[in-house]
Image 1: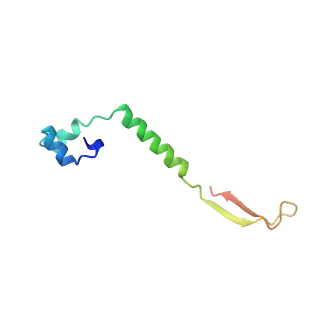
Image 2: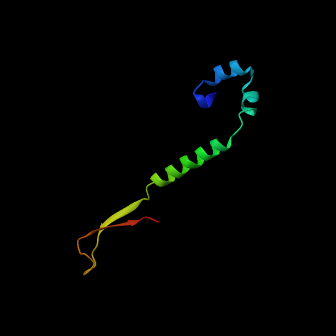
Image 3: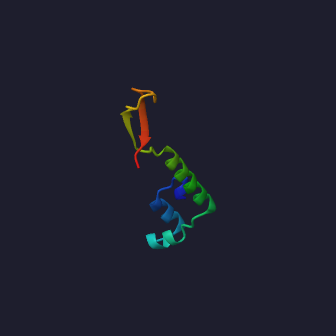
Length: 73
């Protein structure tokens, strides 16, 4: 019911669970829940920005004056 957007207090009334502990005990994690969590992590990691430092390249014959970005490690 919570996955459908029904507030927990209402879901507990409907299901007859009187305590949070019993309600949580029966909140089973499904394969779909696990797949959705994995997809969210993949999206998060894909959007994560690697910190970089920007500087002017001082080496001759290597595009002098060109801006170079390198990952900070």
